[in-house]
Image (cartoon, rainbow, N blue to C red; front, side):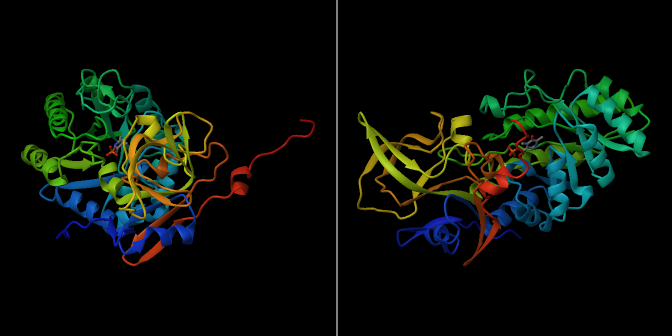
Amino acid sequence: MVTPTMEPFAYRDGRLFAEGVDLADLALAVGTPFYCYSHAHLSEQAERFDAAFAKLPHLTCFSVKACSNLAILALMARRGLGFDIVSGGELARCLAAGAAPATIVYSGVGKTAAEMKQALEAGIRCFNVESPGELDLLNQVAGELGVTAPVALRVNPDVDPQTHPYISTGMKENKFGISHREAVAEYQRAAAMANIEVVGIDCHIGSQLTSVQPFLDALDRLLALVAQLAAAGVTVRHLDLGGGLGIRYRAESPPTPAEYATPLVERILPTGLTVILEPGRVLVGNGGCFVTRVLYTKENDGKRFVIVDAGMNDLVRPTLYGAYQEILPVAAHAERPNRIVDVVGPICESGDFLARSRELVVVRPGELLAVMSAGAYGFSMASTYNTRPRVAEVMVQGERYHLIRERETVASLMAGEHIPEGV
Ligand SMILES: *Cc1c(COP(=O)(O)O)cnc(C)c1O
């Protein structure tokens, strides 16, 4: 049974809380900026998503790149989820978090021989192969190790997910996957390879999708291919539908996990196939927020700026995708007026903003702002540009909080750098 929805972040007496913890208290305890995740929300989303596919033999593989902190991976693993990885580094994270190798699938267009070896030695569940060259190399690496590599081909179904071009991955102009027109020939080649075992078929059409139709279109393409493959003598046991289910950042109304799953389950059930899902954003996006402190406010020729201690290196989505993320004052200030402002960071780039032309209550230096829906592609996309140590991550659980990642230090950023003699 899935527990009823709780709001992970809500005001109590004009102060913004994460579950039972005042974000202002957290800011004093860990400093700013920091990411804060709700244990209850993450657990609930994982359980709810997984339960939506209960009628099918299935494996829900959390997409590690959405939020890859070990504590979050451990939380997912303990709720029976597997993982979708895109690098050897992510594989190491999953294993460190206690994941069973048989629950890990490996996606990505640029796997190296070393990463293939690492994953074969670990004994992962499946490689989602994205090109003929990758298939050849995987066969060779598996041969050298004397093992067989379980493989699904990532097919590009050429459907338009109607999302931002940077996060659309399943159209023919994207770099991902193998054309659905070439898939049968490539599967026949794979099936004939000595160290490859064909186990599934895979696609991933994009991210932040807010309707079910593109998923159904992709499923139809895949099921048609499964039939063509069977006719050609190639059997697949699982269907991997990738990730991509969207969340609400502002006014979107994406399908719930159940609304997403129900029509898919209906179509897959008669096939007897196992289904693998690779959700990322939907499991963690709304379960995290990002807290920053106001440094200055200023006005240039009538344009107002709120300058905060967080930059695009800490949270890149607003500038990279033009993404809207709600910004809330940690103390509500109901008595103050609103203003149209740009919320900007300290980085030397004009693209360094968290919000542009945003209506926000008047805030003063020293006060705190919370950027909402920051659990997915927040910390995991952070960089150290401008020699800014990556921020702390905190997980709140009821009235308690856990520091799940310490703030980096400048010393740790410089470690490994060397000044040669005579430079
Ligand atoms: C990023 C990614 C996902 C997760 O996407 P979300 O939109 O976060 O659900 C799943 N599968 C693959 C192959 C990906 O690259």
